[in-house]
Amino acid sequence: MAKQQQEVRDLQEGSYVIIDDAACKINAYSTAKPGKHGSAKARIEAKGVFDGKKRSLSQPVDAKIWVPIIERKQGQVVSVDGNDMQVMDLETYETITMRMPEDVDASPDENIEYLEMEDQRKIV
View 1: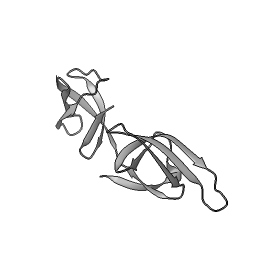
View 2: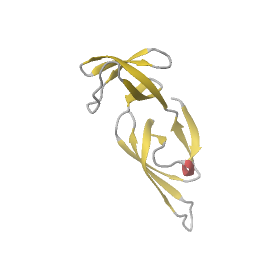
View 3: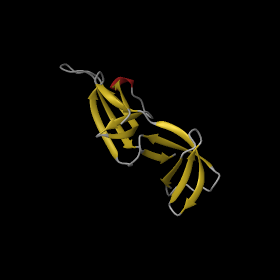
View 4: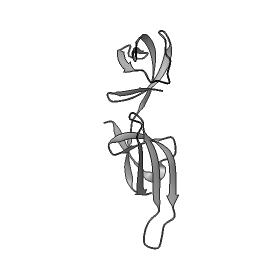
């Protein structure tokens, strides 16, 4: 999995983080003040990018955490067959078969945007 380390205090809503070995997008980020015997803590509420599950994490703000490297790419729909569709990447011209989400209505020759992390892809 392509990832890099980052401090928890540098995270913000809308960025990505790895929780339970899954890439997640941060929905809520809050911090608690340091107490008498401890450091400040951050609470992160996130939703899985590729599986849609909700996850939470509580860490000290100076702790290191893994952040996935997710690429945002452009593609063109080549064909649609039921719930599957063939998409051609506009940079590499490779053809990829993807499952079409229920809320997306795509037709051939339409340009789409999708997220890619290693072998996982999702239409935005």
